[in-house]
Image 1 (cartoon, rainbow, N blue to C red):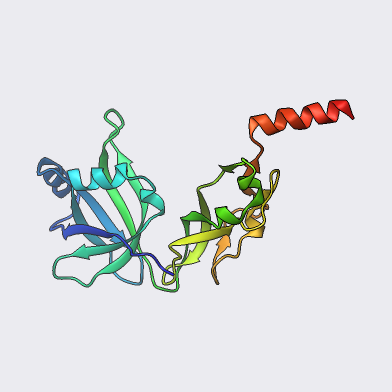
Image 2: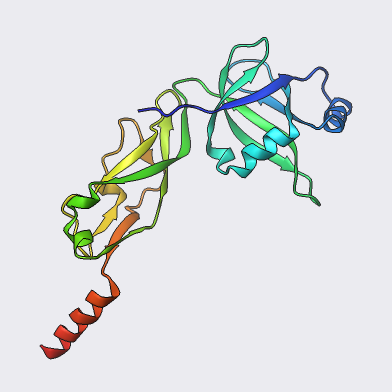
Amino acid sequence: MAGEIPDLIAEARMGTGKGAARQARREQLVPGIVYGGGKDPQPINIKYNYLLTKLKQGRFLSTLFNLKVEGQEDVRVICRGVQRDVVKDLPTHVDLMRLRRTSRINLFIHVNFENADKAPGLKRGGTLTIVRPEVELEVTAGDIPDHITVDLTGKNIGDVIHINDVALPEGAKPTISRNFVIANIAAPSGLRSSDNEEAAEE
């Protein structure tokens, strides 16, 4: 069910305030703070290039991380803000929030499509048009699904798949209340023209 939670490696930062933060930046570190979870705020530093790599991977603000700080217990965190240099647009500070296993959070979950070989519409040359390769769900931090699955069995040309057509994992619900489209099966251009010709003859 739950996918492997990626690690976020940091080190404890000695001292607080602007002086300590400036010193961290001179050493190619990005200062940050970990708060919440009923514990005192913890100042940290994250290696600049390491953080930049994580940011470039995307979805940094909606990914649950396993924060590893030497000498401390691992803790689950989610980023609640990245401050950036207004000129260079590079990270200058990170805010992380601790989560309990029972905490409810919004995350983007990957959509898998299966049984394409059992979809008559695709066998006839139709194309699966994916509108949302990921959907934002509200989930429990201790039970995060790795993906949700759309079963294409029996789907024909013109069929539209909405979020309400998908069986979501227990405890997960969409963050958007409306019944939005995830994918549809579009007709191939050749078939569309022949259908138009038939309609014209009739």
